[in-house]
Length: 444
Image: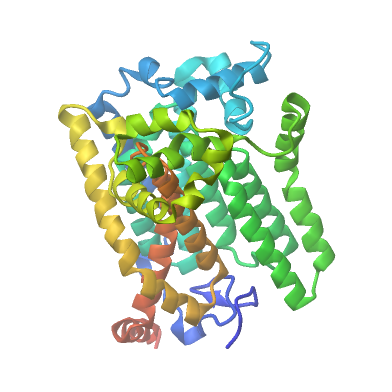
């Protein structure tokens, strides 16, 4: 059985990162509706996306309240402060040690065009992310039908729209993940030097947007090293392009070293443990409210704080699962809590997330079977990254679905590509493909 790699294979016509790809007889014959020019389909889907976005924006009243909403979150105000410091409007920012530079750099648009300019840019990011996810699935499956399913899943989630009205990184992260998927769907992800460079560069941009994604970057680089050692081909090119892709991370480390005298991307990791996870463990150990736990853990000495989780492993595991289960996976969008239509969208976000919660479990064995058969690197990494994003939410509370929403493009890609494979591999799918391959009376 071939190992995971990037040997040449084809899945519905697109070059994929798989060692044991489809044979010609297994290919999903493109139906007549799938042969439409890409620009025409994207134009229709884009118009639909704009309509759905406008409907939610008007129904929730977010458009009228945009100036009050955009920097209403404390995180958004920190990004604004770092942006002002970055563009020389203030001498210093206490948040620059926690907030990397990419999103504050983007917020420079506020200094030029105001909040509405930043909102328009984020709305464009949302639509761009939806279309890039669609194109990634189209490239992976050669099916506009399944690509349209991915698009529908994307635009149907109200949280992704709601995030565009706030000065937060989530919309930019979703766009970067969608772009990464589009690159990954072309194949050669671990073997072609230019593909390695592109993927590394996008993961570097993600890292200097959300520092936790440095783990995803390390996973990718480790996979590249393993593939290079196994194949012993184009090693120098892989190293060169991966190194060039790390330039954004190097820039962020240089900023941290010059401004704060520390080597690293951000000090955010320690903040998450101190302000979120340790208090949630303390709450279960001492049976107090979360507010009391937050106060109590601030009074712990550095030694007691560092050892608290280690000394209470069962409580830590319980707190992790409760945060993951109740606070994130089955939660709704906190920005949509309200009255009338806003509350309706909040309820819909909870229903959507609950259904998706079940799909996560339902697809585990289906994805495992697909990976065993197809050796698809893009699906393997997308599934791994999505699982890592979801797992990281077990460290925090009161976030709603804000953090898990960033994994949606990855889930949509995995679900639709795997579901497409099921239809192709099923007996009725094979029979349908065989019927379409028969010559028509006119052809004969």
